[in-house]
Length: 228
Image (cartoon, rainbow, N blue to C red; front, top):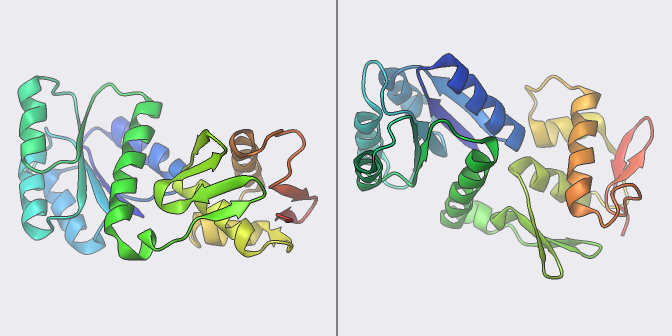
């Protein structure tokens, strides 16, 4: 999924970009309202993160124009304006959510995943992705979740891509390059440490015993494999 970040503060813009890219989203960024609308027309993002106070056009004006062009694209306001009226205006303009600065990483991730789930539900191609099982773990791509019995595991877009690839290629060794091409994108510069760190964190959430994994098996010097 592609996300447009419209934020004039370079540190906040970079921070949001890092959070979203780590989750598996393709990020495009704008430093003004005018640039945000230009990129919206050019890139056709799946959803938009909007600051309110920006040069050129305010986030409110950008949201109005986005809604005029596309009634379905998801919009999240992320702003230091914290008065109740600001939230009300944002939601009345059709925003899906309103996050107040300063924000925590976990809060942003949780809210963006919620927006993604709603987007999945409205997108037939993604909603058609069927749940699949990895041993005793049931994965639900359209929910960004997995379940083991009554326990629910929250997943990122990239987590789902990794697990889906393991399921699709079950029994076969998947190389590091394949993981990067399928789960990070062709324009990503491969780095083994990046993959290994992500797998280590994913194991902590999807394995019964992360130190003795049963789902994501390491094939030393090559990549990873899932065996039924």
